[in-house]
Image 1 (cartoon, rainbow, N blue to C red):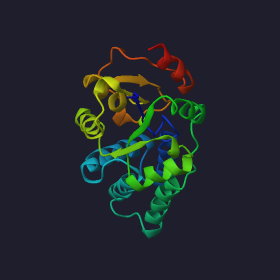
Image 2: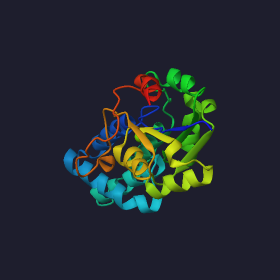
Image 3: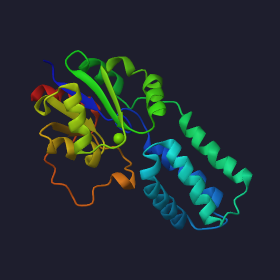
Image 4: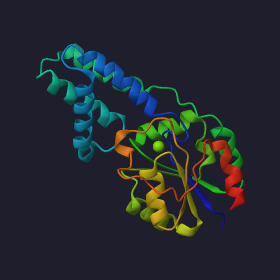
Length: 228
Ligand SMILES: [Mg+2]
């Protein structure tokens, strides 16, 4: 039985957080006549966190949170044109081209010969499926799991459903909180490849003793896996 190697998608296979940062800058510009940047950022973050229980992760929920925040911060004075602008910001995010991060295509191609490759990602189902197609990487992954949360119970359910023992499972991703710690807790292996931006919500509260490998680039992944 081949080992399963699972990849996170956003900011591991392709850029993501940068699109949010860019959009948030346009959102600030829209509301700058009313408030300062730090206050806009803080209110948007609060709205997003409050709404996770309603919308989950992804661009659609983020767009609704931007609209709600804009209405709150303008005390409902944001007009139809303003709301249209926010909707357009969200749609522009969904329309972004998906370019694999440097080295991803070659490494995924190479490892597909040795491992069962899987994608495990949060976000909107349709958007993530579309991104996988646009990235051109889809055919290399035998399994794709688009989930609402990436915690221990989610990973346990995936391994159970797919009949994969944790000892034969390795996860690769940019988020210590979502990609590394829950997998280690289940007895799997995990490899951290940091991205230069981390969404506030994914930042781990207390410093983590690095008991897992950290790679600068996905290009270093095949050599590490072979050394195991
Ligand atoms: Mg990620």
